[in-house]
Amino acid sequence: MALVDRVKNIIISPKTEWDVIAGETTAPKDLVLGYVLPLAGAAAIASFIGSVIFVSLLGGMLGASFGVVGAAVGAIIHVIMAVVSVFVLGFIIDALAPTFGGQKNLNQALKLTAYSYTPAWVFGLAAIIPFLGTIAALIGGIYGLYVLYLGLPKLMRNPEEKSVPYLVVVIIAAIVLWMVIAFITAATMGLGALGAAAVHGSSPSYDRSPSTAKLNEFARKMEEAGKKMEAAQKSGDPNKAMEASMAALGTAISGGKGVEPVSLDQLKPFLPENFAGLPRTDMRTERGGVTGLMMAKVEGSYGDSAGKTARLEVSDTGGAAGLMGLAAWMNIVGEKEDANRREVTKKEGGRFVHEEVSKTGGTNKYTVIVADRYVVNAQGSVDIGTLKSGVASIDLGKLEAMKDATAPKQQ
Image 1 (cartoon, one colour):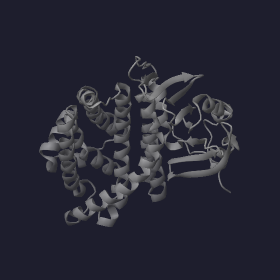
Image 2 (cartoon, rainbow, N blue to C red):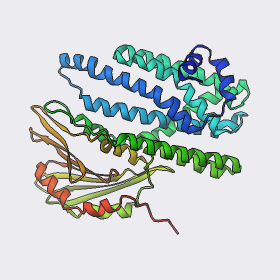
Image 3 (cartoon, rainbow, N blue to C red):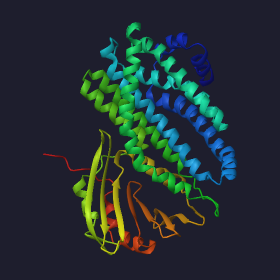
Image 4 (tube, one colour):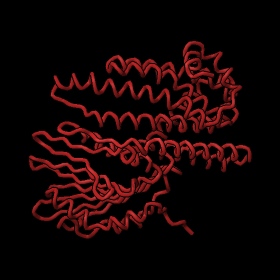
């Protein structure tokens, strides 16, 4: 069915449209490429226009500013997370189906989730006018829950009297799982800072030529993930089905290039005993997430008796590595400067580098993205030159060589 007709029917007559949808066999790849991306992309574009045009005008009156490239990066991440959300909620709905007398069917669950997002994406077009967009998004979200409620018994075959508790548990479970995804996403949000730096005082530079090839490769991997899910479902093995489902989710959030992150022991050697002329005073490590969506980070604190401090973080974005690749897809570079700070985003030796220099004696920051996967972030009260020298003293070539590395399998 044509996208416009499906959208119209979902919003105007959802109850009868679910009967039509229940009888359709739509592959996850086709659902994502033919429905989710066009609608989520349109909503993201509307939000981008609203942010750049209207919010920038208001910001000028209030002494604030919004970067065009920063808004563009935000829109791209918004689209990616729309795909992720469809898979996340689809997995939850499918896993909970037997609890409420329903039938497990991941393809049906993914259709249910994707089409239930329709009101949110369509009403989200009002984001071109920011204040109206907020109200419209709220209305779209509420109506989307109603659409989901109507679709549960149609697609998951649960008794209608159990649809309300089913919906409530789905919402609660989704919130918990999204806290995990938020943790992973937060680790890559420095990408937004990279984009936001390309404003005021420079013309942002883009290289769109690799984008089509990257997106085609992503679509191919999504199709492969979809076939593995279908094969796992036919096998009747719930463990294989769940493993394949989480692998597909990893493919979605990673842009098709996510990997299992390395172990903490593999990252620790990149935290030297001394950094930027300061001894290490503390070390913290963290590795977590869900299967297929893991990340790892080691962090060292440095300081001396004179009050100078620095912090060095080395993160493996692992399952979310595709988000880091967004900068490489767009080749975002630029700079901005005001009375307090100077920020520069550039490419050095094939790596993206972001510098933030305080003009008031505050914290300086220096970040390098290695192999579109590892993030090396240094910041502190020392000058930017010292931070850069400190990062240069780390064996980034060795980190680059670990671009396809994963954690050793435990015996």
